[in-house]
Image (cartoon, rainbow, N blue to C red; front, side):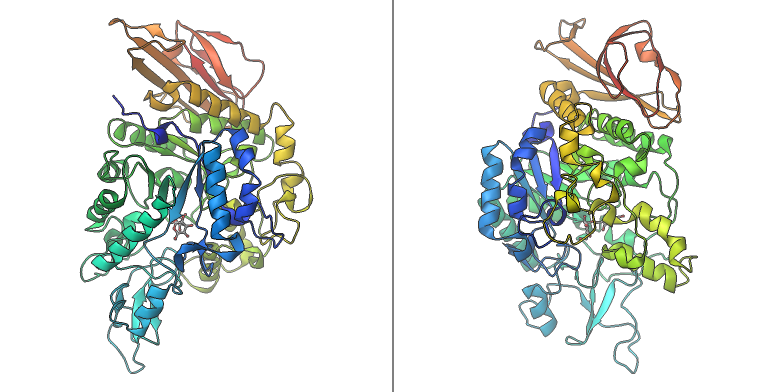
Length: 580
Ligand code: ISL
């Protein structure tokens, strides 16, 4: 039996502060802006806020480059504002988890400043190496061939220290040396410092990248990101995660490890509710079901069979150990409705279908700001409109090097529009007022053109909106354990357009709506059917054959409340949840 935990039953709402709500009028979202919206969050019914980084930062990667772990970036407000936010959330029975980036710091963090000066106390806080075959200019070549997530070498030469330093991301994000015990102690201290302030947990950024093998060997240049086999789940990653969890976390806190390049089997090493693993992991396997072998920028159509395979693998592999984190969108991903649904004719239907899917799998659903109103991808007419460091670096590399077959921006534009992280970072659309009601000033990034139609005010006043549908799902999940704890079983495995599955929950006590099993216990069951395409298939669901079932929730009107038998005629992006 699965152990009950508050964070399993919770619905998480992710806030990207820069783009959520601007109270100061400087065009940048801030904590006082979030404070104005805590009642909005309570109305929606979410339980946990995951706040993207708000620490002091030069903002080379919008806060994922932290310069001081114990302070608030002035553009976002003050520590007092942050404390007021924590209190306002707790007052409304919501919790707060902080995003922590400890694989790397900013190059403006005091540790790095001292490290590059050669200060003995900090000299070994980062990875410093001499160049290879040091030539006459004193710099030579980078120490190995590893490739950065954000294009180019993972090594930059530092004049002051006269050595190269390692950065798996931007050159303003040097990697911390976790081999150094002093570094690990610093991390545990700052985590305890935040926990003492009363937060309810952490989301740990790229936390399976923290261990690099002795000697930092070259990677195989023919395998995806060069060097990944060495720095993803490196030799001591599991040991460090265990140590961190034992030292600072308990099962009372929600801990979400973001892990790049982790499959379900590997995930089991890192999750453990007993206190020496994370509560759950953010993984990426379902984020590549519309991607070719060339990685993120190799855009293909959605392969639903692959999505079924990945989701089913994670559902089954973590069924008895660990827990799933469920997400379709976040600040790094394009908008789910544009990517997996249809952001034109069937925007409403497909956004609701995706919501149905998200809320009926086993795990904790994460809702990214704007998802609850079906916000869509945006357009980037010129490279100057791109803010995201990852997309900007890609465009530069694509146009200037032979690594990609493109010569003009027009050729890469569709790729950028499909994939840029900026798609998720346009201002939250509150109303049809200028800048979507996000700011009275000039927004740091332009609002999506569709804001006059797609906004919170309009959605709240329309009973049939995506927003109200989210509320209904959040409410259902809160009332019925089966949504949270029920077992998962894939149905119609080979159907190319319809994703269907069964959830079952056996329990000893009585819980409304259940039927009795042989041993006198209760057995609850749900059948979920989601059409991921714009066709109108007739499907035969054997699990419903010869049975009667109530329609619990669905995204179209005109469906009978009670279904007899397994034959269903579905409309474009239709989703239904039946209870036999
Ligand atoms: O989403 C990605 C893969 O397509 C990458 O852009 C992303 O950088 C990677 O998933 C790791 O993400 C996290 O760490 C990064 C930061 O830029 C992201 O915002 C963060 O979520 C570096 O700290």
